[in-house]
Length: 65
Image 1 (tube, rainbow, N blue to C red):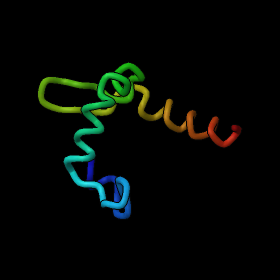
Image 2 (cartoon, rainbow, N blue to C red):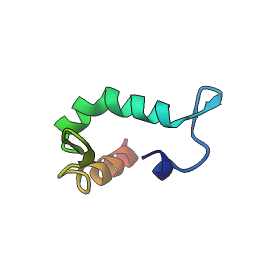
Image 3 (cartoon, one colour):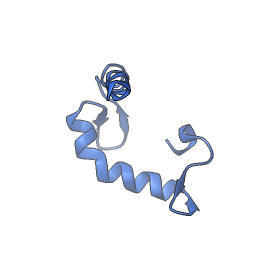
């Protein structure tokens, strides 16, 4: 996941690390699973059923606000 983010992301004044990304994903795991954006198994995270419909819809709605 860290590699998909690309360069330039920061946490405060420091560049983010792999540990930062992992920590945030673990923190948001239940919410992402509840929205079907993340499917969890005992050994891996995979995209959930709503990964292609919910995020693009949310982005379109954000433009209206």
